Length: 616
Image 1 (cartoon, one colour):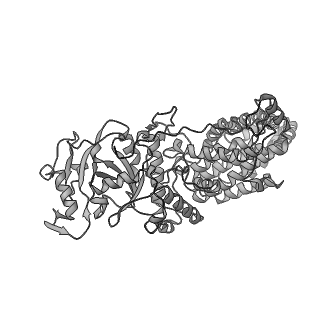
Image 2 (cartoon, rainbow, N blue to C red; image 1 turned 90 degrees about the vertical axis):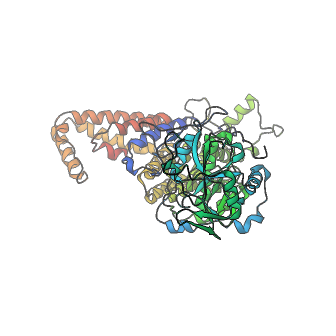
Image 3 (cartoon, rainbow, N blue to C red; image 1 turned 120 degrees about the horizontal axis):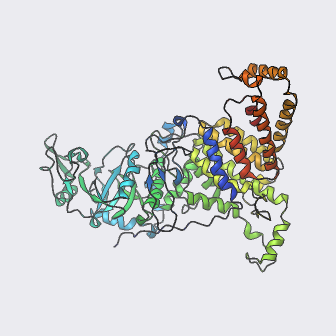
């Protein structure tokens, strides 16, 4: 009862973004981008984790489940994608990334203890050897969570000495970077198998599938829990392989193979080093556990090594570590086999820009990203009050008068605010090659680009006031500057998935700014000219010859039979009609149907020669 109780899931903040349609649009735009993707092996994938999706909670108190889809056609093709996306950072600077460590131990006195985080009771239990630990290999977290969501099962744990000092846990720090903590008094150990330090039972190979039959002498080697407690205190053990008693060195791990189920007895999470990537990984896994096992609450995080034992890693330390990471994360980083799981930054006290950069580098959970974008979108609204006794609430007539006073300048500021948010977040995502972070950011921010759209409503959607990004909104050239910025990011991108995501963003921004309209008109004039001359067979053959000479070497050229017959005319007439429809949608600022039309145009192409350059 002294250990921390489960913390209920926080309710999601209501989405107050100015426009809703673009969220549906981005789902379609994502499907359109998927069609233009490279092969599945080129997609942003974390090869050390199985392909799974994490469903979002639909009602308060529901638990996320991990499912393996039979046909993965979703984008981006990464594990845990609906949780926010898992991304492997770039590989170029692996050595630099391993050098990024957080100096936790010399600063422990600087961090004020927060009793609500739950470190104290767990540390007290560690002193009394009342905690079982389990290190988890980096690629096994998904399968472990699946097991915890099901019926009880046996798993291997260890009983550490007081405070965890003087014991080496199972596995290497690089491949088993994190672990879990259980309060053993809340577990049923009556059926546990217990082996001492130095025996190395290898239970995964020597316990039969029924979970009861022990093989290869493991039954004879069993000891009692009291013997483990005594060995931990004496700090000496019998090495079965060498046949000697070993003293004055860290104990190897012992093994307590016991039943666990759900969040029962789960009291903490720990990292095995002060590597910043391991600490971020721990913060991400904690957020994942909160979503998938809400009964566990927000688990306290610890850091362990054999010499110093367990030390708390609370929110104050996390905030300082993240700030140092952001200052160090300018160059592309790489961590080899360690993915990045989105973190929840709502209690870290980070500034809005720091949160955007953290999302680009590592990723934020959906809830944290939604809260961040909503905060940016609504920032400054409290200063935009009418003479209404300072109240934000307004009656219908007053609200209607305010909406009528909004002009094009308000809409422009709102859209430019979205461009400022995207510039910071996408810049960080490109540097770390984090496509899932880029996709989720565009999905959340795109509604601001279309805040002035009148499609489907009688009045314009109210644009939020601009404070943080007002410098970006002032220049009249920001729309063209942002377009050049996006094209620069495309050149810096290191993967096809990132280039496709940036291309979708370019298309959305071009549609929102109106830059697409004159290009559509130019393509229509070119097609009109061609169709007027197309009744001549000689003209069509000349057109075929010009296209055949200019197509890419090695690519399939235009079929002459299409130009000898009327097939080319029919194709281009249909394409012209579609462009005219797209032109009307752009004039009406109907982004949802406009992007759907673009998607349909791309999907209808097989071997285009003139239509593809026009669309580009």
